Length: 151
Length: 151
DNA sequence: CCCTTATCTGGAACGAATCAAGTTTGTCGT
DNA sequence: ACGACAAACTTGATTCGTTCCAGATAAGGG
Image 1 (cartoon, rainbow over the protein chains, first blue to last red):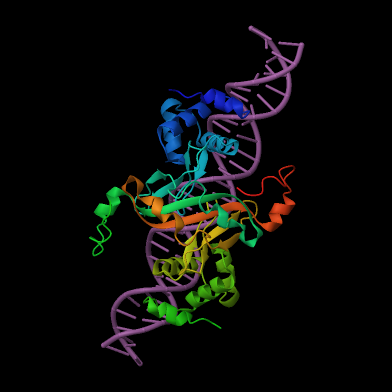
Image 2 (image 1 turned 30 degrees about the vertical axis):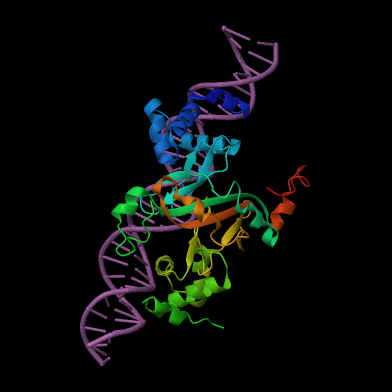
């Protein structure tokens, strides 16, 4: 374990610092975390890191392509370390939980639609909105109960 | 012209007020505007409306389904009045411009991929990232000009 | 026309993120 | 190893978009 964070950093010409290693570690252990949680997790190891350092590190790593920033509408920024595959996310409207989803249609499915309006498109981001298993059952739809029931 | 804003409001049991009509008018004339611009446009007609009123109206209209809120990562909230069709958006990484895109694959293309993780998905949102015609030419990629065409 | 209540006004408050100035710490050259 | 330079960090304040609050206003049914 302990993926070679140091090598990853050096590969993109970033200095190897403890805050950066801690952030990478936190992202490896937690799939989709927001900035605040990153700060908490990092401080578990390094109590003295400033929030600014975390923001800075997240930005540097995102720019370098080591991590990916995801930000569903209305929520705070979250980060994940899976960057190489083209996967998407399901977001729970109720609790904000996020899960990874491989697009069943194939990879980069809708990218072809893009050349409208002369835009040069390089990425298609898909966000599925719905309810996670917990919220789907607790938020009990009053009347659509039986028909929607696949799960 | 002047679509029947009043009827639209009444149809969803919302009171017909001048701020609301002004907001609907602003959204009809401008495809994808952020809250600040809405405030400006509304105040062109009604100089006394408070920013809070606009926020409130936007929320009410969004909840009622008359308008749609879109919020690409890292940008402020924007609103649009096209709500009935399932269309998506191209967002310029450089200037933030937004344009509508009909998904060529068909409507609600990737919705099928969704049942992973027990989530009950009811909407698939697609955001295409790239560069608008203006920025694509001005940001002149130094060498990747011809080859990188698609994807 | 009056009453109820949704809606609007004005101002304060909030959280996420950024900026600025100064200090620490990696990394490279010798 | 040692020192220097610049990248990276700390601290603290600031901005920005948005929301919360209390009171005033006005839409729409009776």
